[in-house]
Length: 349
Image (cartoon, rainbow, N blue to C red):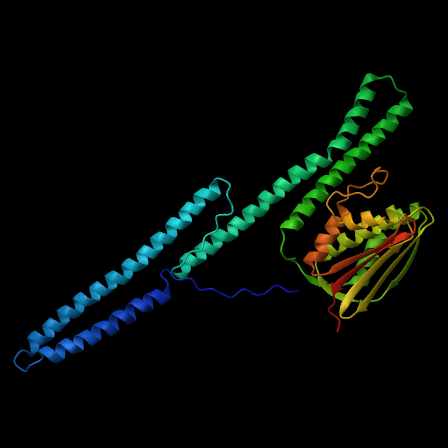
């Protein structure tokens, strides 16, 4: 999915098509009228007078034609500027739906298109801000209440040193969770406003998986999880950071929901001109209801919140895969494990 090269555009101080239209219209009309008048008035005796009359008429006709055409152009220009001015006034009041459709010289059309693009950008920024405020304010109440409760207990002073240390550890953990929530909310809001992925490059899927495994090696070791891999080399055109985000989220989820001494299988392979990534665990699995909602923002199948997380990871994964024109499938059975299969367009023939 490569970026299309934009056509080079030459800008003129006055639209060249309009300029040529005025010139040729004026020239053709003037010549025709001039020839007719010359033929009707020409005599050997009054040759100079005939020439003078024709010249005056041609000059007058030229001025009249030019005035009419330029008057029409100016009217169009002023009409377009008025429409743009009214739209700007609405935009200044926060209405970013006031797009314009200006007809006229290419410069005016270009100005209208640029204004519409500005509205899209401003609307995306506004959406990003509103989503962040709404979602973040809703989701951070629980950890904040927890922090407040433990701080009050510490301030009362009726606790032991061990209890104080325990409460401070919990407070530190909750602060980290709020920070993670903020970062993920911003990332998801940003992804929701994007329509295409930039900074594309050729990436080997198997190498990207190995990088993610190395980053999560300590998590695997802490739970003594057996990792089984079969990583075939497949190339895709993608944003490396986005692919890394997908892999980190899915593999860390597999680790999180797999019990100690469990097993995780990760395979990469090519199928029907697509790159496939399979991440399978033998963890706690999901119910049918959970499977239907796992990609919803802030949804958690674990309603007890005994597992760390705020249900944003899979929403981010789903959105990135959609932007990359791929697909993700889930197969899971409660208490038996889950399997995620990602499909992305391959570069290999």
